[in-house]
Amino acid sequence: MKTNCAFIEKILVSFIKTEIHRFGFRNAILGLSGGLDSAVTACLSARALGEKNVWALLMPYGKGFRQDVDDALEVAKELGIHTQVIDIKPMVDAFYETHPTDNRLLKGNKMARERMSILYDFSVRKKALIIGTSNKTELLLGYGTLHGDMASALNPIGDLYKTQIREFAAHLGIPGKIIQKAPAAGLWPGQTDEGELGMTYEVIDRVLHALVDERRSPEDLIQSGFDKETVRRIETLIKKSEFKRKLPPIAKISNRTVGHDFLYSSDRGK
Amino acid sequence: MKIGIVQSAPYLGDVRKNLESHLEAVEKASAEKIDLLVFPELSLTGYTLCDLTQEIAMRPDNNPVFKKLLRESGRMDLVFGFVEEKERGLFYNSAAYLRKGQVRHIHRKVYLPTYGMFEEGKFFTEGRNFDVFPADVFQTGMMICYDFLQFGACYLLFAGGAELIICLSAAPGRGYAPENKFGSSDMWELMGAALSRFTTSYVIYCNRVGFEDGKAFAGGSFVYGPTGSQICCARYGEEDYISAEIHPDALRDARCKRLYKRDDRPEIIQAALQRLIQKHED
Image (cartoon, rainbow over all chains, first blue to last red; front, side, top):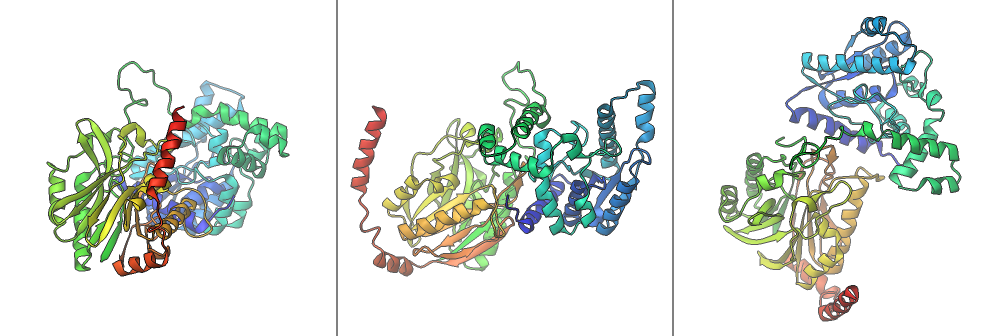
């Protein structure tokens, strides 16, 4: 995969600026986790709109993610963007007090949606559009919470694989410790993406690139030496998560139906 | 002859605003004594029109926007893109050449990309011709975007005697390139170089910029001379304006040295195509 960082930066900065301004906004808001994707997105937003027009919300669950909060604050300080820390523990715990569960995934999704809910609330308070931070790897694997971290008004990094974002982050001058940090969704302390997926991003991205960008068949990949289990697993994850990349199907009754043949660009009139 | 190329980012579905920016561009160009000013594909409407296509279509003979531009074409020749309702209920992705207050020619896009992210065939009717017409000092032919990548279409303009080929484009950028551009920009430049050299013609390519639904239009508009060398190229992925002098003498010189036009054999091509088509039908 060739990544021309300087040109990608130019296009993505221009994308954020164009989209925010064409809808009559000046500000952007995003969740800053202390990880790589949101750091890159925050940096692009600051360059597109000016650092004083970018709001970063840090939304840890309790005190378990101190290091991530510190890292996020450091990134935000370096960029000069606004920050606000909101602990989501009280709201999440309030729900589970009456509806208890031991399912960590359920809790993780709840936290992601709690953050989404706060972001949308603050997007009105700050007159800001929400910038998404889902990368191409996550989108293809469905490794994100629907209506949680996947919710946004626009997404500048959704066509960049995780490994491309690492290279891109270095170009942008994101601190090395953020780039080298093990990617984690912050679902529970000690959780890492690669631990949970059981594959490294290097391997995943090579397989995804071959399947998606080069449109090679899984059989072809396996024959040319890719690990069979890995290829099959990734293929299944892609297929299983198709619904996360689409709006829900609307049952068609009339001649002209939203989502079927009522066809307009979201940029119309802009 | 001095030409200007407006690498703009049209508003999607707002003809009034786009007309304003056309008029501003004409104003600026007139200070520079431009003879021909070229705008991108669908420059009056924006590209991703979908169902807006039929709501925004116009007829050159009775449209106030056209009237304004016709008046402006007294100052310089104008080439721009719009949705044309040629027959009632049939919509074309069209390019107009206005000269001295008259519609000199309208090209209707023949090759409507309908694959992957492109959906033109769902909304537009296909044009059927690649005509060459006299305008100012050159025999001129027009193409719209994907037309330019069909070498059959390029050949028709060559065989028709085009000396100046104008391509209006709304080409989204995609893929990687080592330089500061999308990989897809290489494709257009390759065709620009090849087409200008092997038709010994001037080639003007005017691409748009801006974003629609996340797609970045790539810019990189250019002019190639009749020897196949690039005369100028606009910036990639941002608004720009470029201008160039083009000369009938340079074209004559190229055709004296390279005899592709003299040696063209349309009758052989036609007979061979006839045989091919008959075979297809068998």
